[in-house]
Image 1 (cartoon, rainbow, N blue to C red):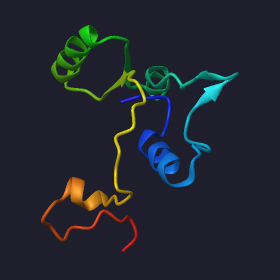
Image 2: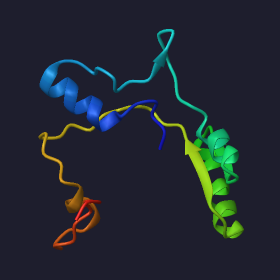
Image 3: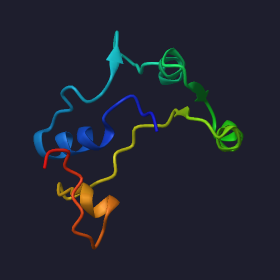
Length: 105
């Protein structure tokens, strides 16, 4: 999901600090993002850039059928979802669990 930003962080920054410093990607004042599909190809992985909702289903179907790693770069609007500022990644990936996703023991 490529929104040319760190969208969630930008939303929290705006809500709490009235800024989006370093979280919205712009080049010469225009929205900018790296070409993640091309970056994937540079690493020897198939990369597909999806530019519309109509292209998405076919890209996912082809990726699954290929049975190989595929990066699907999906352009989307940066529309932050309001939050209370509390965000625990464990609640998203392992709700009701004591698993830790910290990389350092």
